[in-house]
Length: 314
Image (cartoon, rainbow, N blue to C red; front, side, top):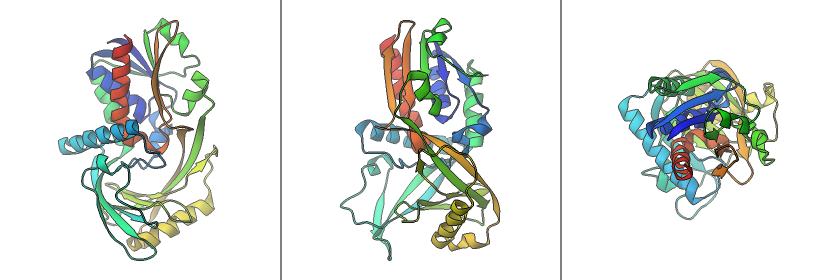
């Protein structure tokens, strides 16, 4: 595949870089920020296509990613866990949701008021601080590079490689002149894990999306979904609401000490993710951005599509 530069060191960028390397490319990743400052590190990173419209491509990416994370969990990849999941729904629905066929065995059972039913399935979870390190180490072990560098122009990179992948998250829109990219602010609270190993979520809570995702040492409680809000200042009212809703959903959390909170900006795009190629004067530019809060959920499937686009465009 030759030389490829991937712009962006989050989960979409690093996953894409690893997949390109597996397909024979010599890959360099440029990332403006260290891992601890990336929204991927803040994310709960549990497989679920949240706030993502039904789309055949998205369904394919989600299914591919689900299977890849199941394999990685079985292989003991650092930071990858599987969690039994209980998803409560407050609104009646005919049949299973559009994403269910990507998630293996999804069962619907009756649930007590105020819920209508409960969906049960197994969801992969990535402890992203650990998992991003593993992706980076895997890339470097295969001969790739991760370089701290802020990119101001995608076209200028063609002097260094014939293929450039734009996986720069929120910065991707400015780099390619896409005004549909917008931040979606998310706030989560971290508490000590009192022994939980089941994820629970209530997407329809009128006070805000509510989820409880136990990791190996802590539990991620969420959350907020605020399109267009770009500040990173903690919101005490949001924090109190998250804790109140989480304890109501999982009472065992009432005694869990609070460890901290995190705020991040999901890289969303009106119309959904953009994964497509365009020929520029200097070379081939492939876009892979706009995954919003589903970056982990779509990462490996999106990466496969990028590889196909690079192969077809060479």
